[in-house]
Image (cartoon, rainbow, N blue to C red; front, side, top):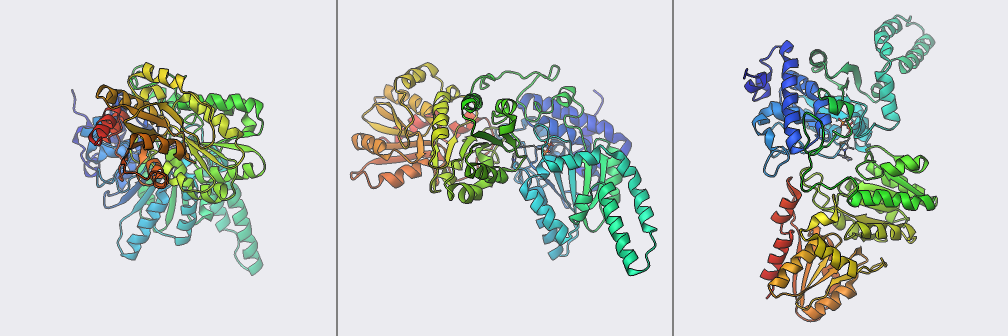
Length: 638
Ligand SMILES: Cc1ncc(C[n+]2csc(CCOP(=O)(O)OP(=O)(O)O)c2C)c(N)n1
C-alpha cells in the first residue's frame, strides 16, 4: 500500500513540513480514518468531518501546544486528535481505557481544556488571553465555536466581555447552519443572511473606500459622515454585529477549502486585537450519507460504512422502545386533551423525544437553542402566566440552570415539569455527559418534588401525575435506553412488577418484594437491578425486601423505616453520586426513626468524575451491577 501523508505526521510540526497543495490529500486521509473508526466505535461524525480542513489550517498556522486552542463542545475535534499524536490510538475512541470523544486535558498537552458542554470556549480563551497579558507572554489564544454554541448565554457574555477587554484573541466561528438539527434563533438568521449575501462581501471594500473619501471638514459634516458611515456599514457590511461588540470581523470564508483557511489565518493571526473569523463549513463533509443526513450522523453508534446503516448492537433498543420514546408519546397523548401544556427543549428535540410534539403542536413547542438557563427561565414565565411548561432536558445540561431552578422556579413555587433524560451514567460520552449529580443538586431545593420511574410504564404514570400536580415544580429523572436492558432476567422482573403496581401518590414508594433479612431501597430504574441482585441473594439464603422509593423528595421514610425495623439491615442503591444523593437523603431522615443498631450501606457512585466507557462495564466497575450489588450486600451481611 502506498504510504499515506498521514503516516509521517505525529505532531503539528510534521504537518508544517507538507506544502499547502498536499493538504487536500491529507484532509481526505484524515476523513477516512475518522469515518472508519467512528463506524466501529460510534461518535460525533458529522461535526468532525465538517471541521477537517479548518483544523488542518489552524494547526498549520499556529504553534500548538504553545499557542492555545480551545474547542467548544469539542465533538468536532477528531482531526485535531489525529494530528496531535493520537492517530495510532484513534481506534480506541470512546472505548473504556481508550481516547476520549472530547478534548481531555489529561489525555494530551494539545487538549488544553476538557470540554463537552457548549458555549464555554470564548470565556476560557479570554481568561487565558488575560493571564498571558498579565505575565507579558506572547502566545496566541484561539476559540473554535459552532454557530449553535455561539447562541448560548455564556458565549454571548464572553463576547461582550472580550470586546470590552480588547484582548488579542481569535474566535473562529465554525458556521454550518446546524446545531444537532437546524440551528434556530435570531443570531442564526443573522449569520445566514451574511452567508447568503455574497454581494455584501464584494462591495464591502468598495463601500469602505468610498466612505474614506467623504470630505472630512467641518464638525457637523464629520458627524453626519460618521452617521452615514455607521448606517451604511450596518446595512451592507457583514459581521457588523461583531464589530459593534469590539471584534474585527473577517469572512465569511469557505472553511472546507484549506488554502483559503490558511491564507486567511496567515493574514489575521498576528493582529493584536479581538478577531472573529467566520468560516462556513459543511456538516458531514466528504461522506455522502452524513452530508445528506447530518442530524442522524451528528452522534451515531456503529454503522456500515458502505450503506450508512446502523449496525445493531446487543445493548441497542428499537426506535419504539425506551424511556425517551415513552415520554415523547405520553406528552403528545396528554397534550391533545390538555391545551395548557407547552414543551421546551434546548436544541435537542429528537434527543429528548419532543420531535413528535413539535410536529403536532408547533404553537406550543419551543426550541430555545443551546440555552438551558433561558429554557428554565422561559418555562418559569410560561408557568407564571398559567401554562404547564414541560422542559425536557438532559440531566447534565440542567446543571447549567441551577440558579434558574432555584430563583425562577422553586423560589416562586411554579408548576414547571422537568423531564431529566440521560440520568445516571451515559457511557461513551464520559464525564461531561454523565447525569450523576441531579439528585444532589435538586434534592436540597425547597418546594420541588423529585422522582424516578422504575420502567417506561411508571414514567407514563409519573408524567401524568406531574402534569396534574399543581402545587409546585416536579423533576422526573430517567436513564438512556430501556428499563429491560437494566438486568438480564427480564421476565422475572416483569412478572414481579406486574403484581405490585400501585398508583403514584405524592411521597409514597412501593414495596416490590417482601423479605426479612435485609432492606434494599432503590430509586426508580435501579429497582430492576436490585430485584436481580435480590434473586441472586435468595440462592445464597438471604431474603431481601426490595423497595422502589419512587420519590427522592418527599421521601417515603415510613415505608423504609418499617422495613428496616424488621430486617435490621439497610442498603440504598442509586446511579448517582453518593454525596448529597438519594442514599444520603434516606440516612438524614431515618436517623430519627430507627432507635436500634442497624447495618447501613449506601451503594452509589464515588466522589469523582466517572470516565467514559460502555455503560454496563462502568456500572460493574463502580459496584452497581446486580452481581456487584449482591456481593456488597453479602459482604456487609453481618
Ligand atoms: C450546554 C450544552 N447543551 C447541549 C449540548 C448538546 N449538543 C452537543 S453538540 C450540539 C450542537 C452544536 O452545534 P454547533 O455548535 O453549531 O456545532 P456543530 O455540531 O454544528 O459543528 C448540542 C446541542 C451540549 N453539548 N452542551
